Every structure is written in C-alpha cells, then in structure tokens.
Image (cartoon, rainbow, N blue to C red; front, side, top):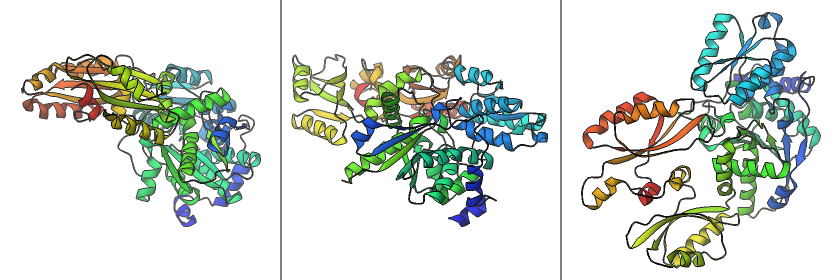
Length: 526
C-alpha cells in the first residue's frame, strides 16, 4: 500500500502525520464537539457519535483545508490574490480564510448557485463571478482567470496542504474518542477521507476507516475498481457537496493505502439520516453532511441482518450544514422511505363499492400514508398507495405476501425512482393515445426523464427547445430548490420522427433517460 502512495505523493505517511499535528489552523477554525446520539445508539445497538463540523464559522469542514493552504503560500503567490471554482462550502471556507489573512479571494460560481451561497461568499469578503450553468464551466473559467490575472488557483480537495488541513478533524476525533472501532467519512473528491485516514491509521491501526459515497456519485468506488482515478459519465446532484466526477490523484493514493472499505448509500437513506440528525441535535445537515451517518446506519443494519452483537463505538462526520431551505420539502417526502418506514405499492382492486374498505382491512393496523386513484369505468382499478411500516424490509415483504394471499395483484414501487419522483403526483388519467391503443391503433407516446440546470428561464428554455418541434403529451416538473431540475415528459413520436428526435436530444446537452418501459408509467399513465 505504501508503494502506491510513493507513486502519487512526494510525502511519506509520517510527513502527513507530523504536519497534521502542527497545522496552524486554530486561530480561525475551532475544535468541534463530538456528540453522542443516544436515540440512534439505542435503536442500532452500538455507541454512535457525531463529529460536528457544522460548528465551524462557515458550517463546514472546508474551512480547515482552505486556511491551511493559504497559510502555506508565499507572499509572491498571494500578491494578485487567489481564485477557486466552487458552488458551495469550499467557496465559503476560502473566502473567510482569505479575509482573515488579508488576501483577495475570487470565487467563480455557476449561475445556478442558490442566492444564499452567493450571498455568504460575499459576506465573508470574497468576490463572486457567476459563469456558466455547471461546475465544469465554472472550473474552466477559474483556470483561465488564474492564468490571465496571475492568481493562485486553490483546488478544493486534490492538494497536499488542503488534505493536511482536513486531517485535523481526525486529530480532534482521536483525542475525543481514543478507542473508536469504526469511523465513517464522507467522500466527494476525497480530501477529508484522505487526511483523516492517513492520520488515524498510523496512530490507531485497529480503527476501521470506511468511506461513504452517494450511489449516484461513487467516483471512489469506480477508481478502486479500475485501480486508478477515472471519470464518471454523470453524477447525481442531490448531495451536491460530494457530486464529483473524478477522485483526486493525491487523495486516491492515500485512500488506497489507508481506507479499509467503501459503502454507497441511496438518496432515501441520506434523507433518513438528515431526519435522525435533526431529531438528535436540532441541526439540519445538508445531504453531503449526513452522508457518513447514512453509511453508518447501513453498516449497523447489516450487523443486524448478520446477527452480529453490535456494541461497537462508531463515529460519523457531520461534514456540513449549508442546506438550501427549499430542499427540505424533498427530504421530508423521502426520509420515511429511507428509514424503511413506508412502502409504495400499485395494487389492482375490483371497481366496485366497498373495495377500498376491504383493502384497508387486509393491510390490518398499518396506516395509509398516500392514496391515489381515478375512476376509468373498467372492471378493475389501479391504486397508488403508501403504507406505513415499522422500519424493516422483512415487514414490507410480509405486507406484499399478505396482499397476494388475499388475491390482490401487487407491484412494489418502493425502489422505483420514477414512481417516487413523478408518477405519484400524476395519477388521474391516461393519454389519448391509450384510447387509440385500446382500439388497436398505434400508440406513439414515448416517455423521457430530463435533468437540467436550474436558473431563471431554464424551464421556459427547455419547453421552447422541445415543444416547438414535437407535441408534448405529458409533463411533470416540481422545483425542489436544487441546482438541477427534474422533468418527466411524453412526446407523440411516429417512427419517421424518431431518428431526428434523438439527434435533437443529443444536441441539447441535457441528461436524459427513456422511461417508456418503466412499470410505473405502464401501470398508471399508459
């Protein structure tokens, strides 16, 4: 493992250890608390702790690495100022660190960045330049500005000084919890995991280090499989603080050498952990901030499945709490699914009086959380129903088996993203093309999901690009306050139009996926 590290870094593990111990960050950063999560500890049969990086002045650990990096610069490197591209916590940490040291900081941010983050950077003394609709466009602009204006570019994670600054989290954690069995650390570009792992493994080799990634942004998992950093084709944007396409070169070498395991978690599991953190601490973690606790909970659930005794000391890092308030609507809708406390089902019931009552009697004392239905005049009806559970996959299986035994046709959509994101809000009618299909005529509706950068006029631009060329037969969009919007759209396409349509999709540059064969669409809207 150390041979791999020698190839990617001029610094030895001992160099990192020494420099983390001596990192001059505490005239700006603070030593954050280690909070015991009593309710969760009882529920999961382990002693669970949360390292509270939300307590930094910028509500994120990023201040540590940024300040350590700026402290290492020469006067010549600072004379024209520093620059970085960031849509979030690195921007705020760098702005405050530069302000403290009297260095001019310029932050290039995508135009899609929420106002709260732009305002915070300016409040901390940074100059903001809004460029492009994505991080990649902002990053490219920052590189050009750095060259043209002789500014020093500060990388958010793949920099030795930044890694050392982030490693100070481990120094504090080991003092606060000397005998931790497992430490769970969130992974985006890998700066925090690399810095903490190189420190912890040298001083506490028995402590297991587990990196936690979002399923839809698992660049470390991809790199470990390939044996080197690789680019993901696309990344999910819910946990935007870890939405990184490629793990860092410096960070990857350290992670290979000192990290024991990597766990990936779903959006719903992250939402459940945001709720748990709030209930224990009254802090609202951002999705990336709750990522490591979601991994910890998944680890504990596996312990339960494997009949392991538990009783370990487990620590997770609350890496940030810069939540966009409007995102809470989405979190509240999805956290019960993440806790395994809700099942989303499609159930076929007879179209006759008393059917719904009999269905409720069949599911017993379980509460109905959602019920969607529309009369179609057919002998049977499709209902979209949410059912509250106690918190286990086994109970969901028992519910499904009970319904099948009672002669109901059931489809489980609990893990169907299209059903959870769009279909549940659209129950109510079938397309005119469906009627044509029932009369043995051709049904030309094709369904697609799209993702596009959120900014004023973005939806109008999307509609103009698509609606002027093809007839839109179905449309659903809901703004969740995120950087990217999610659209579900149906189009009336005959065979002669399809080649031109797909060429147009590719030229637009939106991320898209065809959903025509998705069972949720076929059940309720086709």
